[in-house]
Structures are given as structure tokens and as C-alpha cells.
Image 1 (cartoon, one colour):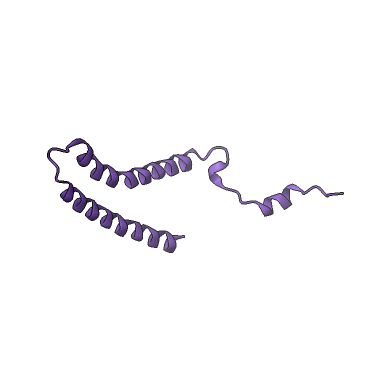
Image 2 (image 1 turned 120 degrees about the horizontal axis):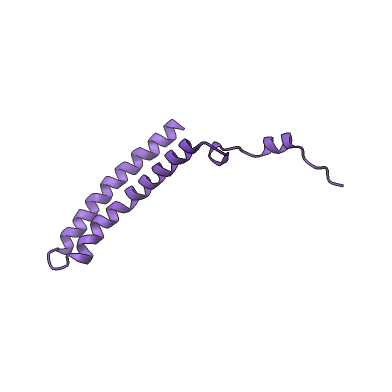
Length: 91
């Protein structure tokens, strides 16, 4: 017959997170804001490249748009590398 685990044993096995506890609205709001800003920062380079190509076709030289895209993504690469280094060192 299997023994039932006690609450203390279960607490040792599982990780508790303040985000999922009741209350902590400041933490939830801050994490939600950071997440939304991160997604916006991720999609802005794509928008900056695709908007002129899709909507300003008569005024955009495609080759120039691609050179701009390469510049934007190189900047994004540097930013993501710095973010990764910050995360590794901070946590």
C-alpha cells in the first residue's frame, strides 16, 4: 500500500513561486510589463523592415530595405548578446 505524502514532503519536492501566490500584484504587474516590452522589442525590427517593403513599394528600393534590415538585426544581435551576458551574470 502506498503511503500518502505529507505537506512538508511535498513542499520539499516542489518549487514555490511568489508569482503564483495570492496577492503580489506589484510583482505580477512588473513581470507582465517587462514581458510586454520584451515582445515589443522583439517585433519592432521586423515591423521596421516589413512596413516599407509591404506598404511603400513604389518609394522603396528593395536592396536598400534589405541593407537596413541587416543593420537592424546586427544591432539586435548585439542587444541580445548583452542581455544574455547580463542574465547569466545577474542570476
